[in-house]
Image (cartoon, rainbow, N blue to C red):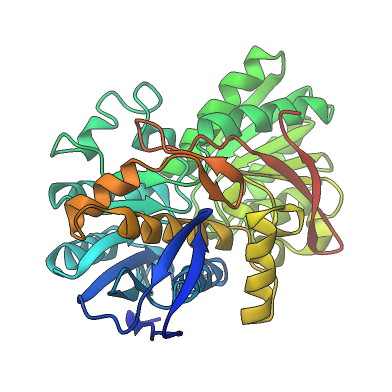
Length: 405
């Protein structure tokens, strides 16, 4: 899908709408100029189904304020950070998107990225320009938290010495721990751990492994896979021989999680299979085949699925279904939330430029959002700690429980 610029029209002459529980006055006509929000998400490949609903969420948030804030017209540009060659996010494309945003004088905020590896590319580019970045999906802890990643993280992403990167989703240091705890609760004593060699997959499996061992589970294997392999039959034979109760895969649908699950089952493995939120999309079920997942597959997610949301989350889901005629994928609400954070920051910013809006995003406190009230901490992370567990039945995700309870 090519990049497209979407300039939302003014929907009302004079109205008042709610954003984060506070009033944002919409005046007409907008005369002060244009402020642009750019998103950078993988819009080519199997991630497109998920990211399309995220873009819908962003558009919904902008439409709710009539396409303008405080006399400024809000423009939105939907950029693709994937390439046809990779069928997934591409470092060169992500760098190009970030540099394009920096060069666009009207751009005051960047929503992205979907993949944590892509964030490593974009954050320093945007940081040098003082351009705020709000991610709806990155969960790798090292992007923000000292001591949770490599030795130079997160300082390496902050060449200006200031923080410009924020995220509205909980990180993998929480998700990996809860996944291991849930595995033990489900009865797993022996686990074989796999990851896709990417930043997200390696990070979450490291956390999962550490927690699993600390609570008495035996790790009978730990391997990285080639995410471009045609099949994993020999790996399935190796896994089966270790007789694990659980196979935990750290990766995404786009890094072949579905093929891994399919080959584990065809290779005779009959135990449980668990994946993180990077697989919490219908494309994963389609890639694996529902029959290979039903009953013994578990998925963790940093938040609640749409049907379990309450308050602002439930209001979002109802508005989404009314506008787009479908139930949103899991991360749609986080695209919406990211846009709402930025729109409120624009309304509250002392100056309607990059520095003013960055300062207003950083000051976000007690935001009344899709997961209740939360704030950004000093590192740019959300204070929300809601995690949930799902399974698969009859080709659909089914909510099991709130994790940690």
